[in-house]
Image (cartoon, rainbow, N blue to C red; front, side):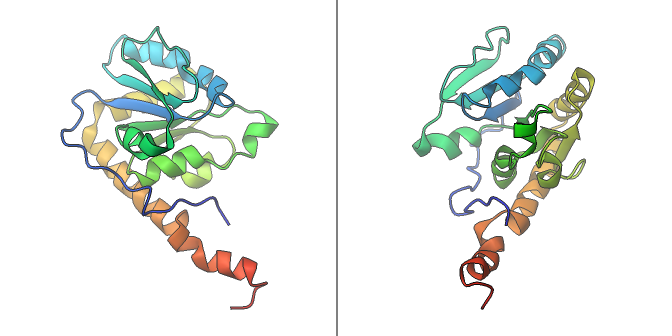
Length: 193
């Protein structure tokens, strides 16, 4: 049974005005924040040619002060969905280490539930959650791949909306409590329904 979200809680909050400058975002804790080093130089390179904001929702400020559009948002349960809903592009960099390979891809599940397309590392469950080219992009952990697909999404609002809608549908169909409720019941009833 995959990790699931409750669609009554993880529902996109309609933005009153579409962001004229796209927001790339990441959410996580201090324990996975070092994974952001995978994309730090890439974001600096993109900043030279493209305008974007980079929001980090975390318990500790990750200090991306080299980015002019950086914003730290302290994680709070009460504002989590509202803060996530501001993202136009969600990222989930994951290093090639044994611990990370077992991670469940919850960031990508959250982004998708909120109609946010993701760019994720080709490590662990990222490729299971994100359908490459359909709900977002699955990339190798090198600057060329990360930059190529982030730029593609920064430049194309229609593509972001198309992938985001497909991501939302995928999460509702495979990673929502509604979609997995029978499996949960079966698990706790010893297979007897």
